[in-house]
Image 1 (tube, rainbow, N blue to C red):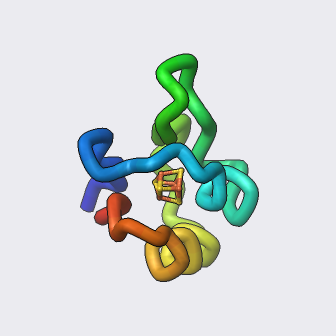
Image 2: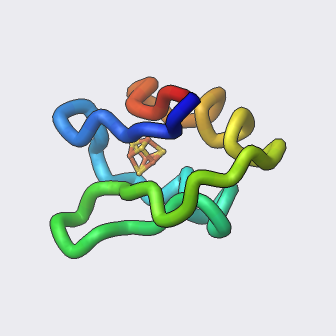
Image 3: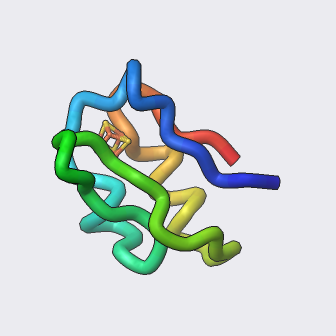
Length: 57
Ligand code: SF4
């Protein structure tokens, strides 16, 4: 399983990187990016809270 951000969907709200900063960061393009593939519980929390369902694993 690979954690992915759909950059077409991402609106750059920053929620995922504040919920789970070990895995998600905001890129220079203003969209979220995956900085580390870590299987930790906050990944699911970020997936569940992304307003546009842009995160998958
Ligand atoms: S929570 Fe979703 S919309 Fe917001 S920055 Fe992360 S991936 Fe993008």
